[in-house]
Each structure stands twice: as structure tokens, then as C-alpha cells.
Image (cartoon, rainbow, N blue to C red; front, side):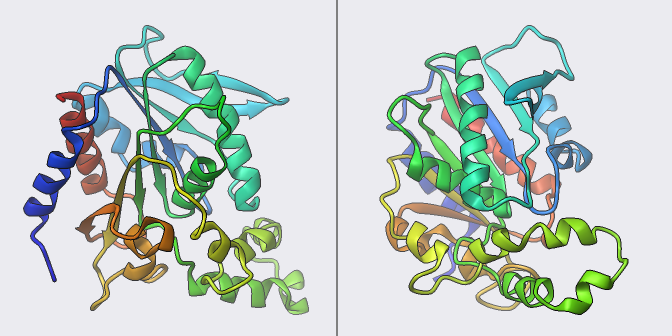
Length: 275
């Protein structure tokens, strides 16, 4: 059944009435291939700032330490966002372990405050892996919002593996070939779930209590999706461990970050803050 977006948002807000939040920290995780600057290049951080969010900076890992390439006023307020650089060609478990380092560093700056993750594309799967593997001494996540994420996998991962293993591709001098060939294990992790593979395992692990929100594309005919990830795969309600626990917000725009995604984040976080 198709439910109007406005109705979905009202239902979501009713759910959030039980959440108590003091301050909000939003961590933005990019997808494949990409970097933290993608959120900035798409103009999404500008929308957040226009809505009163403080730019906490751009974080990178250097010599096993989190380095802050701050882009704004160092005096942080209680609505702060961060962008991160992730090794996007690495397998999901390695990326999630590095995300844990970022989370510990951010938590040190904002002890006891609400940490919220937003992951684009494969970044949403990385965020879920962090939540599933989170140790008791690591920061918990209050809200996970995924945008066009391949939770059930993508056929492009199968195509990537075929091309990755073909000897002719090693001789092609196309741009980004080295990155493509380093991504073989990541492609394995993003294969459509089937017994014995990574996503089949992850999607049946216990997921912690949190608010789960799926922003999905509806550019294609039902069940929707975009040219890279089906709508079924983008919907966290189709994950066995999360069935019925995710709110779904349909959007359009193809497999890329859009202004509408930023506007949804602003609305969702603003409502949570008012509780």
C-alpha cells in the first residue's frame, strides 16, 4: 500500500516522541566511490548550516589518528555535523572498524550527546555493520538514516566481480582502474544476499534499538529504486532483522545525493530535537 509522504512523516514523528535528546551530532558517511567532500559538493552541508547546524569539520584518519581538518568555527554548538573520509574500496568490516574510531573521537568531543548516522549508498551498510558490531564501550547510535543503500545487495556488485576477475580489465587504461581492482572484496560484500554470503549474515544479526529511516529512490517502476540499487534493496524493512522497524521516505533523483535528502535530514533531526 502506498502511503503519502506527509502521513509517513507524521507517523515517524509520533514514534520519536518517546526519544529523549539533549543535543544532536550528525555523522555523514559517503558511499562508493566517494569521499566525505561529496556531502559538501552536493550542497547538503550548506542546507544543514542554513538550518542552524554547526559544521564540526571534516575528519580523516592519518597514522592511526583522527585528524580534524576543521572547516568552520571551532566553538561547537549542540547541533553539529561532521563529514568523514572512508576507504571506500575496502570491505565493509574494515570500513566499520574505522568508523568506530571516528565515533569514539566524536564521542570524546560530545560526551553523552545523541549520535546520529546518515549513510549514503554503501555507507548505509557500513553504518549498520558498526551498529551490529558495536562494543559496550563504544558510542551507541540513536538514529540511522540510509539513503539509496544496497541493504539486500546490488546486481552491479556481481558485474563488478565479473569484470574484476577478467584478465582483459587489468590491461585497460581507463581512469580509476586501480581503484576498481582494489574493490574486489567490497564487491563480494555487496552481492545480493544469499545463504553463506556477507549480507545474508549481516541481515540476520540482532540490530540494536534505534530509529531506522530508509530514504529510497522511486525513479523506476515498482518496486522503485534507481539504476544502481532496487527499491526493495534500499528499504530496511526488507532486512529480516529489521522487518517492520524502519520508516520509509520515498524520493527521486537517481543514485546521487540531492537537496531533498538534506531537507529530509533537517526535518527529521529538527523534530527529534524538539522532543
